[in-house]
Length: 218
Length: 338
Ligand SMILES: Nc1ncnc2c1ncn2[C@@H]1O[C@H](COP(=O)(O)OP(=O)(O)OP(=O)(O)O)[C@@H](O)[C@H]1O
Ligand SMILES: [Mg+2]
Image 1 (tube, rainbow over the protein chains, first blue to last red):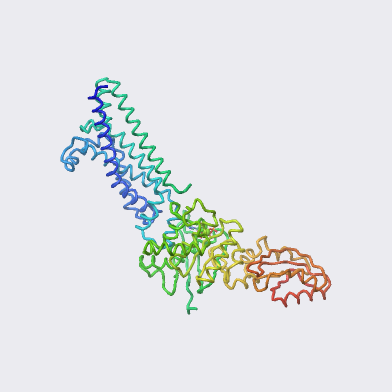
Image 2 (spheres, each protein chain N blue to C red):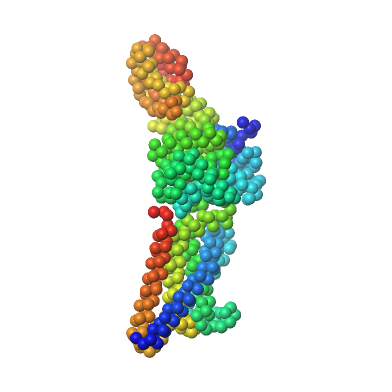
């Protein structure tokens, strides 16, 4: 393998990780509060509010039903507004964040749903406010499940970065498509795919272990 | 002793919306719970016990009627004031409801964090409370590493953390074996005596009430069937609901109705635990048949009941009744004497 190729791979790994982790971080900044609001405003939640719940639920469902590639193109003007350009790794992160946030909101919602209602009731009986229940009961009690969810979210985002080629975002997925699919260089494609598999494995395994480490229920 | 009751419930009603119209869970409930009472609320499953106790700290808002806590009408309080009031009412549950990702110590700190204690202050008090519930060595254990009885002790310590005036217990011993149940009840009694905390105990088991309550309300089909001193209700249950609870195996009275010369002796903690029947037989020099017996020794006092068949001989029978009455035991005839 030529040193040129190796350099390209290293750059690809860097771009992939940058886009994946960067997008995951920002998507969580949106998705986590969204998931919390969805769970507390549910009719069995600690702060039921059917209007807010159904509006947010509808928005989440609509955004989630958009095919990523269409979203990516449709929001190009918005991307330009935010990062000043519509091409490159950073620009690719905008559609990644927007499409991942509602998915993360649902993941967070389902993690928080696992928290025992009795424990929440106990906190209420001690005079805990809604904010205290969120910060001291819901999130800490659901921590292992939230971590597992974030491993799923991150690896899913990683899969979507393969489409970054369309916006010149680069990354391993882009290399695989350009070299393998368009130029029939199977060896390059196989190497990039193996690298992607390794990264996904690593992220997932790290998530599993960290979640197990945090979980005091066993 | 303060003048008024610490908790007063007036014409309380609670309905839930159901598929086929409203479900009435509580109807016209009136109760007064005095300071330092250990007040039992007993009833069959679905009678409305949990709903009632949840109305006391407004986890459930009554549909009608009022709940006064320390003279304050809870429905008049703002959300913030209500949360403050709840800090004066500890609560423990059948399923313990501990935070599973926190250690025992951190669980006890939890209500103090909510109430705004400093970290150091909370930790110090939590350690004292661990001593109180005899689990000082379990400070760093997680709930998953504790037995049911130990979990309930931690839950009790947690409920006491913010110095509540009242402790609400919803089926606190129903998930425990008889030994753990006895030790939890002893702990509650201890807390009541040492700290002067009013305790409200919800249960479906008469034995729990017998062991520690001084007053009891029997709740049957959403209503209070009978309410009063525990000893009185135990000795002389008036309503059918009460009789059913006092005699778990159907009605003992009904069962032995046709057995002549049968009497029921009730031990309600007024007499010390001694072999009363054996002594009576020795003193009166006549044999008796023990038909039913269920007694317990609690703190050296006798609780429970025994049904015996007196001898045919009238003088012996009378001497026996005299003997029992002299020992301050409540006696009820279940089959006619003579
Ligand atoms: N949130 C609710 N929604 C609708 N119905 C309810 C609700 N909570 C309680 N009920 C109904 O109210 C009645 C009383 O319930 P409650 O839980 O108070 O009974 P309980 O005496 O505590 O019974 P158990 O001994 O089984 O715990 C039941 O018929 C129950 O179905
Ligand atoms: Mg109940």
